[in-house]
Amino acid sequence: MLGDNIFYGHGLPDLLREADARPGGGTVFGYRVADPERYGVVDFDAGGRATAIIEKPAVPPSHYAVTGLYFLDDRAPERARQVRPSERGELEITTLLEMYLHEGTLDVKLMGRGYAWLDTGTHGSLLDAGNFVRTLENRQGQQTGSPDEIAYVKGWIDAGCLGARAALFGKNDYGAYLQRLLEDPAITAPAKETGHARSSNGKAQPGGDIAPSPLSSTRPGR
Image 1: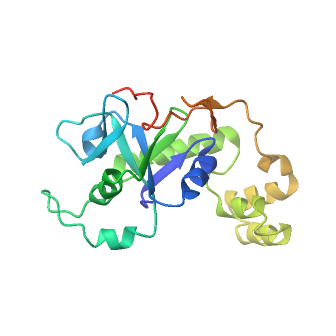
Image 2: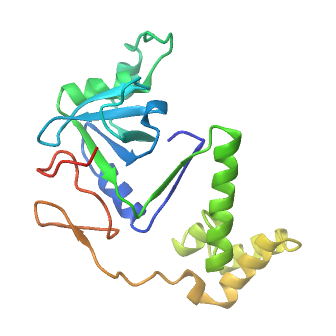
């Protein structure tokens, strides 16, 4: 995962677990953007199958950019050594992804409207991401991406450890939030599922708004 990428959305852990469970090949995620020429872009055939990934095309073949989140098998390091500079003079991750795509082992999944992907590579986009996270936290009263909360919910640390972390940050809002987690378990209670979207094969997909994979019969909008 690229360090300047931020992902947010209900059902995201399930989506990532599904990608991680694949025994081989790779999985990448497409996200609809207004300015695809800034990214690696997925090209689809008439049946909705991904046929190419083009880095920063002058004329984008679709509006679906490849996000900075990649799941690749243990062949990736050796294949990365085969990558040569592109016409832009750079080593492109898309070259590596196309190796998997051309052998038919790359799964391109589309993130639907229920997800947010923020690329914070510019001053403006970093400000946008900060405002996005701040709005969520102020509205919901919950931290976004707190490693201490995640560890506590997963059972990796106990209440004593969480209390020690709360004391460490006792003079700021983060410490107060950790203390509230101990006092009000409802803060970390998982939200009840309200429904599941269904893919073209009839199987339920977690998250409620995950677009079908381009490997299905449904063609994404351009």
